[in-house]
Image (tube, rainbow, N blue to C red; front, side, top):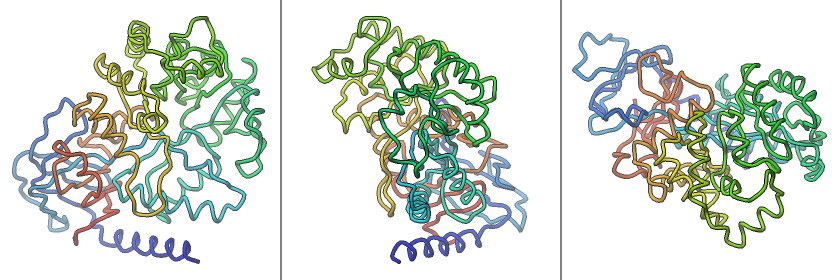
Length: 423
């Protein structure tokens, strides 16, 4: 009953906010942080119309329509909406779908309140995620837009984890959790995943380098992206990079490249790591330069690594940034259901404080890079024609990232979704 009351309150709150939305909104006199790190912030105004950025002006705007709602943002800061590029919203116990949706709806509302307007879900129950996505798009639930993956792995992996989750689905034999044992499995599996609405294939474990390459090529031919773990045992990280995947997750996993041999055994590799495997700088740089050459994004999940005492993640991410590898902010962490702090901010702070990114680079990682790694070119920047997913902050995020903790206003697709101020 308590959770039901929360859900009803959330829906009423969302309806009240959306009812205030005018057709045009002018955000006037704010410091605009574009989303691309090389663009210097400037004071200007942003006109929103039909869910998109209609104009960005750095001179006083004239002839404002009487139908335009003008919001004075003097002393405030505008950034693109944030993106968590590594979440898992569809991996909870799904035996009771009503309860699972109530919990996830609360999580999604909290994501939006904290300025997260888009997420890349890195594998879960596709029908469940499709329903979550639909409810958000139709305005039934407040939350970010969801793009999700199908997880491909060898049959040995699925046998190891068993069938005790995902609502009783036979893992390894669904469109979203698929066992791949030969090249002949790949094309029909890709077709099935695409029908399930995925944006990308998550290449996960127990796959040879030949199968990784086959999956990546077939995914790209089908118009899907290929997202991989940094190490896909028994394949090494360099095998993954050379397959032309779009992103590699978990910077800590890249250390396994230096283990001798053409393949790596998962148990032995982790045993070496826990004994204090020292990072080989030459091997690390060879791998990172290969990623840079191929335009492979690094999804380092340093907050996850720090919480699990994986010290190499920070060292590898710092060097990746120095070498010009594009970085995205992903957490792979549990999100709270209530209005509590979110791990994305912790990830951003670690990228700034320990990994050497500048504040503008961190914001780029959490906006434009997050969009690009998901195949989205319609958001992540404050430019004419881009989707109007915007945050209004009351303090300067270039001075302190804590400015993102409580956005004063969250605008999603041109509509005010969250506001602490009266319009």
